Length: 432
Ligand SMILES: Cc1ncc(COP(=O)(O)O)c(C=O)c1O
Image 1 (cartoon, rainbow, N blue to C red):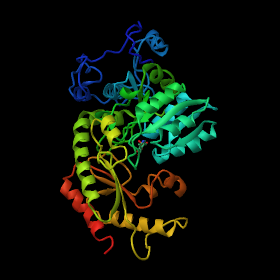
Image 2: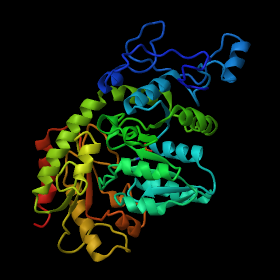
Image 3: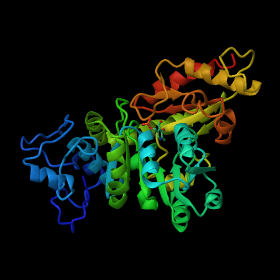
Image 4: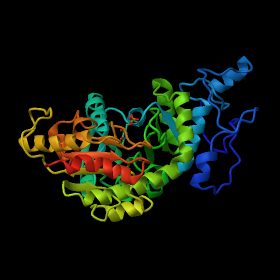
């Protein structure tokens, strides 16, 4: 089904909600979608149906021929999913959005839909571990080559461009080091090379950062994170120009089926309603936690864009609505004595002692959930080296700056004093 919003097109269009043209992000987050059904429901309806009926065969034919916009089959369109797509596009400031079953399937759709064998990608080496694996191991098999470069070295991105470069892929702030890349500078280099810039906006969400305003072409989301906000479902999306989203991306999704289930679409759609206030509250907690961590003697380094000590602090404040976000990472100093935690034999003794210290802090928390997700109202604590980035080699991790002593905290809505007390338990006894 074509979902173009091009008003000059004389196809029969699905109705839009009558919203003020200058409605702000908070208003769009609770109002954008589709008009209610004939029953006048106030909360958006959940359409659990695989297919949609047509009044007659001729209408069915017109809808299949894209002469009339209508719902046909949930693999490529569903009213609940469309409400999520319209709302997310409105928040990101893009013409359109397409929902996917997870954040990884959004990246799968992006590359599958826009690139072909022989094409080249330039990607930050600090992106989410599975993104590296997908681009390198999976797309490498199909002849799409990726060059990984330093997240923050603009010159390295420029030097990596080849005649066949079609895509720049960045994630900012990065996971878990919170490195911030200069979106406007990367957009300029990508466009000069005739490539598109895709930005994974998972950590900031449109509540804090709008990459299209800085020149990015496509926005990637793991809706599993802050868009849902309560750790309930997997979801993903790509936001961008109508010609791309409802062109090659829709064609690929329709054929390949990395579709978001309507129930999950409904959950993230409702999650968007509280996005701004959650991001503000969780980011405020994160800033306080980062400031507290900087004062702890067992902590080696704190990675948080909201701290003046962060190498890209000024850029982050400019790019991220003056806010550091809600993810704080830190490294602990090595543990003393014999290493007792399980550790791969390839690790050096120093790396094993760092791992021991990190495991000690994580294992002494009682409140934080030990899990590899982020973007939940509950605070989540992770050891990236052995979980989210566990499938990379130690060399790949170290190239990305992820040591065995690193801990990532995705800060939730608990009281800050309860969070610092939780982390103090492990830190205080570290070298006792
Ligand atoms: C920055 C980032 N992008 C993409 C993903 C993948 O999202 P999903 O788990 O929804 O597939 C993750 C997951 O942690 C992530 O952190």
